Amino acid sequence: MTYEQFWFGDPGMARTFREAYLLRKREKNEDMWMQGLYIYRAVSAVVASALGDRKAKYIDAPLDYLPKTEAEKKQERYKETQKVINFFDKLLKDNAKKSNERTDVNGNA
Image (cartoon, rainbow, N blue to C red; front, side, top):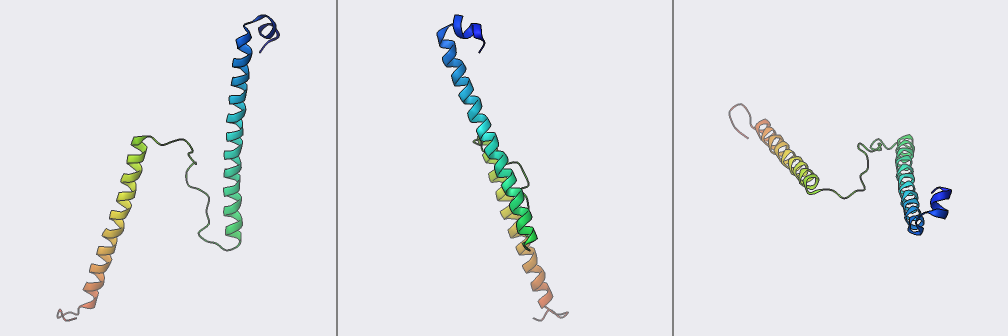
């Protein structure tokens, strides 16, 4: 807010500028919090890996703290369903393979 706006402008402008300032501060605080979370995840992955945890890794995708849309929720449910279907398909194929290995050339178990 300029000097002229403050002293000679509409008194309601000061309130609007203050609210905008507080919103910017809140946004910056959230950005810094997210940056800290990314750094925490990176350091945790490195330390865990150094201590011998082979499964420790950094996150694959950016963290999303905004609410998901219905289309995103539907896509996520579809992906999860496909994972389950693929798991059971693999399980069925493995079991069929094992049962074929158990029988001998004459078909005897």
